Length: 325
Image (cartoon, rainbow, N blue to C red; front, side):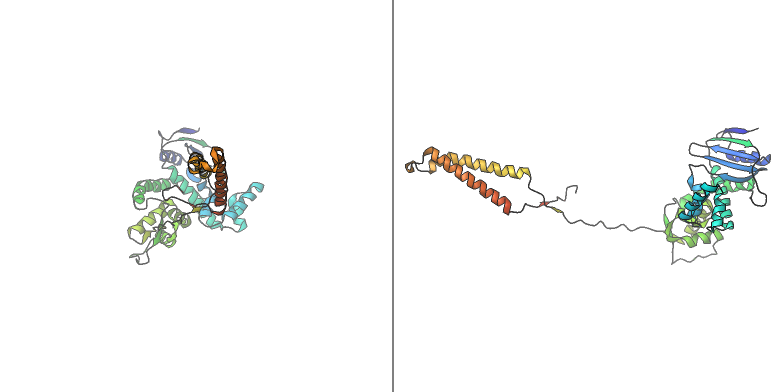
């Protein structure tokens, strides 16, 4: 008989305890708005946990790449082979020589535990447990004690807030302080993390390469930070490069040409008005002659303006320091 309900009424820890106490074998599916996870149990012990497709970071292949055990190219090749023969990705990578059997099993166990610890923090969602036979190779597959998982998961939930106060984000970079020497012998986890803090890796990258698990690596880093053995890397701000003012040489605008034409027309009108007064009437030129003379002057002026436009380079337009450019 299946067991189903919501996490609001029956928590993950209680579900795990019920399956463990009754030594159930089957598959537990947990669905939230963000993801869907499958966990297989054998005789009340946790066999494995499969993260949903919406959480690719938990997929074993991605974990192997981030831990630097294999390269992205090796993973892509193995996935291509898997599509053809449907073999397990671990078998393919091991036969390729990309990873040792012990290393793959270590990462597989880490994936299962990290998925289980993450589930214990869930508060909303739906679950369904379907009893049934589960494929299991005794002596090859490793079972994990549910009670131990629940104890460690509860400890992590209690201590996470304190750890995050000291190392608040996984995007920051820390480095070892060469002037400070450890005053005590570091634990195994702390030594692994300490040696990785070279000032180039982010907290997340250190966690992945340590292969210790998120909480263990993060907590070890917080302990080292408390003893001032490491310090955050502060990136120096680059001084803004002052751009030289751009000189844009552009063709003359129509406004400039219209201005010259307007001046010429005004000059012609002025000549038409004053010519009768300038030219003596005794010369016999008269008004018509004066108009003809003014037109001649206008043509001469137009020729000179055109010649000036041809010879003179356009005035450069200097970008204003208050402009958007």
